[in-house]
Length: 194
Image 1 (cartoon, rainbow, N blue to C red):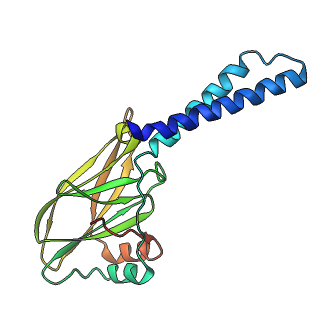
Image 2: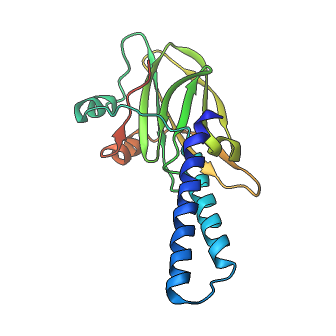
Image 3: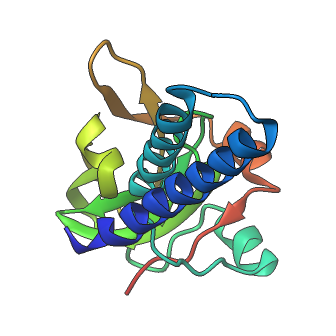
């Protein structure tokens, strides 16, 4: 709940400043703006709160260097391990951070377009993706079981599927590794969280 305090403060500040401005404009023009003086600041204040509350789940993430990105795109996992390459694409909600989990543990946060490479032990894993902040309440999280072999890279795309009442995060396995390499060659890679 505390993460919504600053969006609420900014929403009230926008409404207050716009209200003062419209009142001053009304007095200077010598006319009557009527309900516009009340509803316009209230509406724009609410929109400000809504946008900032959707972004309240965002965290600061570290970007990998170009050399780290190029090495990761070789799709060669560490010896004795497998790896997951998860990338996010799409325009809807691109500024809201999507939390990527492996076996229930948050391993990275991706805005669009971004990707992360996560070393994992060979075997079965649960990969999930969902939003924090107010965006989390408006979207269903995605969750997929993935089998990763030793020396294998599994590539997954995270995107939003639009719904009538709620959007759904879709996690889709991509087998065209060469196409993924070309697509991600100039995309920012995010370092995994510890």
